[in-house]
Length: 89
Image (cartoon, rainbow, N blue to C red; front, side, top):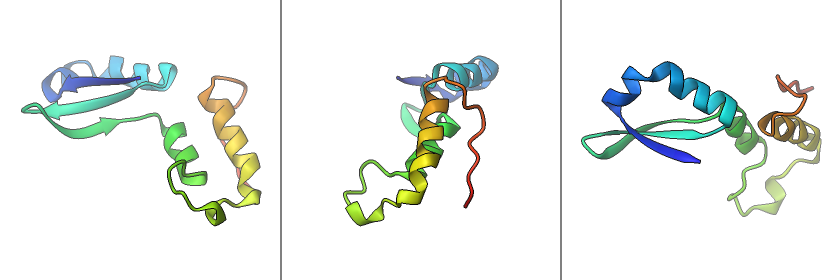
C-alpha cells in the first residue's frame, strides 16, 4: 500500500512511519507543496527489485544463481522466517 503524507507530517510522525514501512511493508510518498519529493520504502522490496527487476522486460537479465537469494527476500517480505538476506555472491 502506498500512503501519501506531507513533509511536515512525515517529520512529526517519523517513528510511526518507519514502523509502518518495516512491519506492514507499506510505502510512504512524501510531498512538499503537493509535489512528490521522496519516498520511504521497505528495504527488502528494494533488494528484491535489484535481484529480479520485475519490469525490466529482459529475460536474459535473470541469473539462475540469484533465485535462492530472491526466495529469501520474498520470504522476508512476507514476514516468514527470513530476517536478514544472506548471499554467497
